[in-house]
Length: 222
Ligand SMILES: C[S@@+](CC[C@H](N)C(=O)[O-])C[C@H]1O[C@@H](n2cnc3c(N)ncnc32)[C@H](O)[C@@H]1O
Image 1 (cartoon, rainbow, N blue to C red):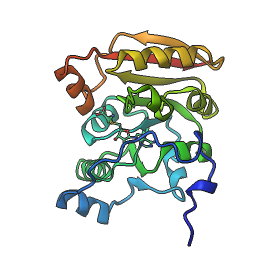
Image 2: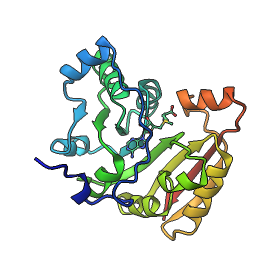
Image 3: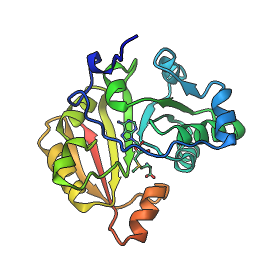
Image 4: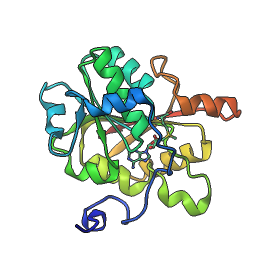
């Protein structure tokens, strides 16, 4: 069977990846969770389950590790969080936490969001992307998540009045996000104070440790 990625519709040019190759060694606990994931782990075929409860669905792109998703699920019990990443250990962690702590408003999918978004079976009330890979070198800017073609594609799946909340520890990336959203008629917003409920994430801690300022931005779908 051939590799199908090149023929599937995606948002950026085929072959452009927004994620970095990362160590994917998984712990025995993560492996056990992935071997019997229960109802939390979805696939493209079962994705519509995330919309079955009729709660608003918020997509968490590149959640990385379980803790912040679990905190948000508890803080916003009226939301269903669809957490997506390509990083298997993080997927295993979140499946484990959701099963062992009986968290019922989180679904998880291991996919490239750029391939999944054009195929979502329902609309989104919001999107969160905390500390997306910054790709600071100019020649890598084409790999950034928050750039015009992605912002445009998200506008098609986020309901009017819905939101996209991002945070970054690269001020230049924040500026380029604001510029890209501002030149798109579907979104309004800009930088905001860090909401007190936003969990501190792993990559945020690293940014703070390395002395970088944190910027939150919030855009509303017009
Ligand atoms: C820098 S980490 C941030 C993780 C976490 N949000 C945090 O703040 O600690 C970026 C995450 O986004 C994921 N990611 C990047 N591009 C992605 C894509 N196209 N689809 C799904 N996940 C992606 C990476 O695998 C990684 O886990």
